[in-house]
Structure formats: C-alpha cells, structure tokens
Image 1 (cartoon, rainbow, N blue to C red):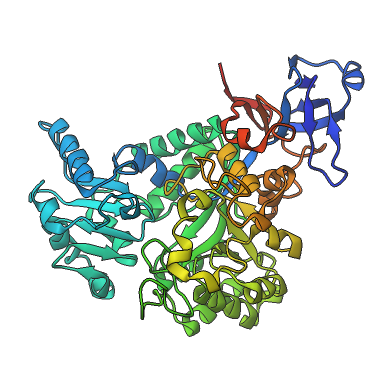
Image 2 (image 1 turned 60 degrees about the vertical axis):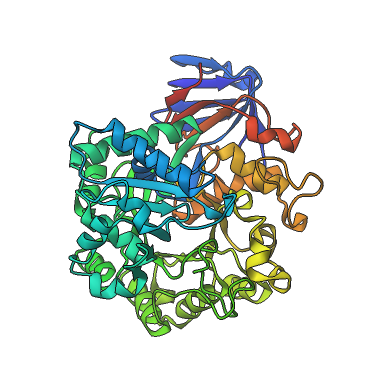
Length: 534
C-alpha cells in the first residue's frame, strides 16, 4: 500500500454505518477499511497517525460559483457594509489605490440594504460622483440586483442583447435586475486564460482548506466577457496537466434558451469527463431572489402588494427545454426560490415525453426555499433532486416571514422533511453569496441557528433540524448521488476514490453549537494530501 491512516475514528457512511480505525490507500483508491490490528499486517510506504481524530469522506459543495468567488475576492467586497456611504467609501478607496494603474472598470459585490441602519439602494448619481470615465457596478449580495454608473449604462446599451434586457434596466437610477445584472459582464474586459486558470487554482486551494474534495459549480458565464469557451479550455488544460486539486462537476449556465441548446448541439453532454473535470447538468435560472423580492410567488409578497416576482421562462419554454434536455441525455438543475417557479419546473419535468429514456435524468431544483407540502409531494413524485444551502438560515431567517407572511411558513426551508420523504437532498453554499465553510453549513443544519447562535433556544423552525449524520451526508454521500458518482465517492469503502477529510474534533460527540468553530486538519484527494493545517 501507499498510505495507511490509523488510530482514527473513521465514519465510513456506508450502508452498514461502519466506524473503522484504519484506512489503506493504493494508487489513489481505498483498498482497506478496518481495525488498527488488521492494518498492522500490511506493509506500506507511509503510515499516518490520526491520533483519535475524526475522518470522513471529503466534502462536496453541490452548488456554488467557484470562479466568481475568486473574482469577487479580488474585487471590492461590500458584504460588511452597513450603509450606502460605507459602500461608496470602499469603492473610492480602491480607485485611489489604483491611481497610476490601468483600471478599465470597477466591480463591487455583497451589499445588503436589510443590514443598513437606513435601508436603501445606492443610486447612479452617487456612482457617477466616483467616476464618469470607467464603468462601476455594485452588485447586491444575492446577485440578482445591482446599480451601475452612467458610463456602465452607456456601454450596456450597446450590447446586442440589450433589447432583451431593457425592461430590467432603470436608466434614471442605474438599477439593474436579473438578466441585466448577468449581461452587464459583457461590457467588461474578459480575463486571459492564464488569469482564468489562476482564479480556478485559487478557489480550489481555498476549498481544500475547508475540507472540500469536490463541487458542483456554475462558471461558464460568471466572469467578465462571458467567454465560456475560454473557461472550459482553462478547466480542461488544468485537468490535463494534473493541476486541478478538486473534482469539478460543471453546472452549465446559459441565460438564454438558444445558447443552452447551441451548447448541447455542439456535442456537450452530462457525464463527459476528464480526470477531475466533468460536464454536469444544464443550469437554468427560473426566478430571482427573496431579498430582492423577485423570487416567483403564486401570491403577492406580504410586504410588496401586487408583486409576485419574475419568471425567466414561460411554461411552454420550460416544457420545450426539459424535453430537449431529456432527448439529448442532459441533466438539468434549475434555480427556483419561489413556489411559482418550482411549480413550473415540476410541471415541465412531468410533461417531458423523453424523461424515462434519459440516463442522465436526475433533474433538480437549486435552492427550493419557499416550498409547501404540495410542492414537496410533487418533487418526490417526479424524483427531483433538491440542491439546498443551509447557510441561508443565517442570511434569511429574519427576513422570510415579513416577505411571505405567516400563512406561508409551513414547510419552507424544509430540508429535514425532504429527507424524511425520500427526496434526494444535497448541500451547497451558493458562494460567493455567502461562505462555503463546511463546518458552518453543518452547524446551521443541525442547530437551525444563525452564526450568532440565535434564536438561542430551539432554533428557527426547529422541526426541520437534522442530525449531525444527516447533515454530513448532505455534503458527502448525498452529494455523490447528485453527480452520478455514488460508486466512486461519498463513502469510505474499498474501491472508491481516497477523497477524505480529517477534523480536529469529533463533531458527532461535541455540543452542536461548537461545530461551527471546528477546524479542518487535513484534506486528501485521490490519496494525495492537498491541505494540512499547521
């Protein structure tokens, strides 16, 4: 053997729920799982003493924006701002620091007016006061709303797609919504392949530090210039050179139906893979966000009378897309936050005449927040995956009821109910909207409290609490099922990839409130240590 890990508490998460003491690895795969005494009989090149620590299968985030995370990290971050004035000051500081450098645009991300002392959006005129020479955009935390300056608006008006998004652009205030926010990237200069590869490696390294060995990520339209071919080429080049330190399952997003179809007609299919990079599902965005009050609801928002949010695709368009995906052996993952959006996607999946013939037909709904008993039953009936984000408890718990009203609170953010009903639910983060820290996500799932420990008693909607084991499986065993890799990953069993994480404490035995502070000590990908905490 190449390596034996011993003297550990190794939770295999296999069907027998076996807890082992030692694991043997050879050529990147697990070849032995058993006791320390049994492990002594094998010769190996290296033995690593776990010193009683907890070992789990490597974590997998099933919905994030890996490239955009790296891009935002290098942009002006507004997540901690408590006023528009603080946002403007942060942007001004970056402009001053960049004097003498070639700066062709300024991208800022992360503000949330609900955290302001005086809640309001920034205004175009305030951004014009910073610069009228380069485009400036300030994107809300959710990514579905933004404000840009006059220079940015003038450039946006020149892109070919502007007639399609004009209704989502307010030229007086600079406010952009939904697809207008996404297409704004078209006015910015695209990074080179070298820069894209650097973004990928940076993000993968940060994910490794948090115990992640895999992810599903929406990347193809996530960078300035929207050059999806360059992004695909960057991933494939890194994979071919053995420089991709994470198993990547790409959620292929295109805002327009014709672009999604063209991608498939070029020959791309779910499951096409290299060593660490695989083409995953087609990603669609069907509605907006709860914070922006653009998530599609069957009834108006409680605090926004007459507003039922927005939809991207009509029912006929969705029906056509699902039939097209099924006919071409493509998985689909659709962003839906509101109940109306979910109803439409469920209907489209049910109508597809080719679903039964699609070997990649594990379609899913990303977010599934404002659910209800009827929607959950239909998801189960149609065998739809649920890509959930436990961290949204921290983001949304105090804002949901004012938005939807008390009468719509039954079975929302209903993740435990999903598991109990047999719905395949897997965990993600939606980073960079929020943090992808696995320990925080497991903490949110188990306690139903925000990062500050509130509510301090039973948590928010305590009936939806999960056990630690259920929460861990969201990011391991269940995540593997969502990418058709349950025979390769997700549990610690012989024959599977040696993708492993070692934690400093046993999160199964400590106070659940402590889980959020537990550190990752080691991350192993294919038998190779890709992160070790000093």
